[in-house]
Length: 357
Image (cartoon, rainbow, N blue to C red; front, side, top):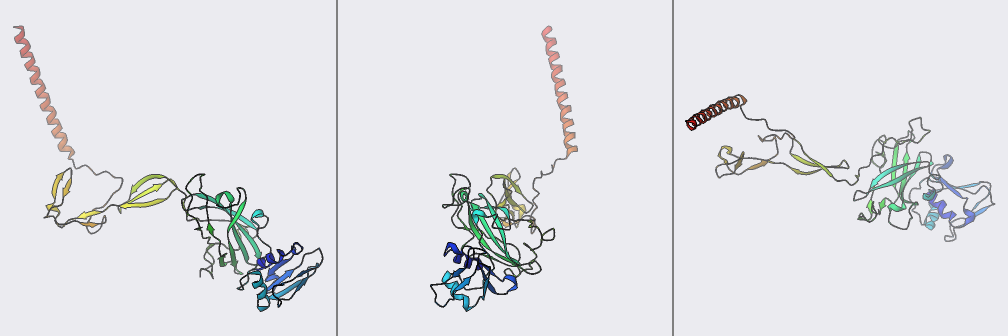
């Protein structure tokens, strides 16, 4: 709220560009403070659209005027078009065109559109007061529909996070109207994703917003004691597009397809049938049996339940052949062949003798 008030004031005239607005500053709880520029002479802030709002004179010596967030400032909020709800801390403004200079720290995150296209989002964190931070998400203009040129960054989502004095995540909010993305296709000429895709940014289990512990997620203490901004883990629940890679069946009969992006999807399930009278099934050959009137109607069940068989994927059925018996039969067949071959040989010799006679 404070930085919105400041933006409204400074937009009235170039001579007001040095005015700064803060909230809860210098230990003043629930109070706004307006500070004039350090040089350039005195400045006067007027609210001509509301005669009940007092004129505030701000001198060049950094004198300040404070006021509570009550009826005294409600007219200022209404004139500027702001909500009169609980004011938020903030000084100055985040500038997407100069994001690094107007933020405290940043990191990059891959986000995915509805068709699995990958887009690089930049998350900027900006400390605006004690235990208070802003967050801003920008994308390159080439990733979004609209007039933002390639190489320029457009802010698409923003919000505020607040910590307790112990450094735990207290509240997290998203600025109304943000967090909705209109992506360009990942590949030039490709199918455009659906418009107005909503992407939520969750900073953890906040105490007030999520009724959580405040320990799971973003915390206001660093790995080296707090002097450095550290990113340990960023989790994204979307997936990039991928091609079919393999298929597998597990012991439960689930048939799953695996894709090149690492995603796995359930595409089917094997089912087994039980018959009231299995011995009355009709054999149709090749280890296949058919239902008959005597066997009864099949009952479809999952594998390894209520007496159904188990599925052992990627396994071969053991042979039901008696190897010793087969070897005996093989030896007998070989002996018979040898005996027949000898008879043929003897017959040839007899015929050859008769021809010589």
